[in-house]
Image (cartoon, rainbow, N blue to C red; front, side):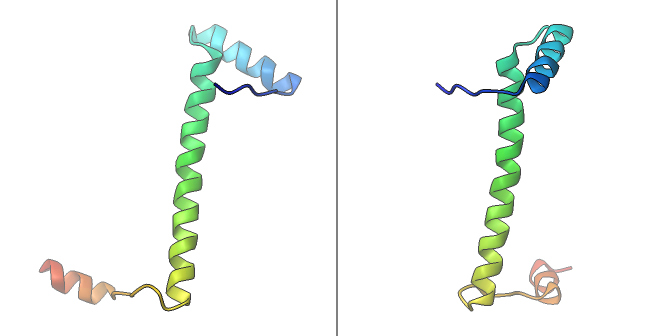
Length: 72
């Protein structure tokens, strides 16, 4: 269970959206959080991979080699 506090404007917008679409506020908060978490995970993983490449902990494969291995 999670409780959050929203500023008045955000709360009004969420209430309006929920009322207009006949969905719950929780539905929209969950949808927004899931999408935002997807983005954060992508950013974190990309930054981690870049850090590993720069530190020599990760191998780099050229596009040419990728195409050759795939038979393209």
